[in-house]
Length: 78
Image (cartoon, rainbow, N blue to C red; front, top):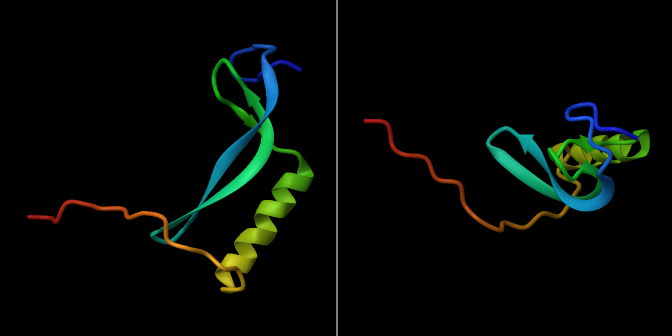
């Protein structure tokens, strides 16, 4: 397999944190996907995409336990 972005063949399965953005919230999900080691492009199979969609639905329905791990700060508009 070659990367569609940089044509590298250095593509391996890696554990990554996928970001799901829901309104002002960001949920980090640990998943395994194929990643190009040259440019960082990620490749998702159908099963992984379905899993991400199911998790997003559970989060929206407030059926998933989540914990706060940090804060996001923005400057106050003058």
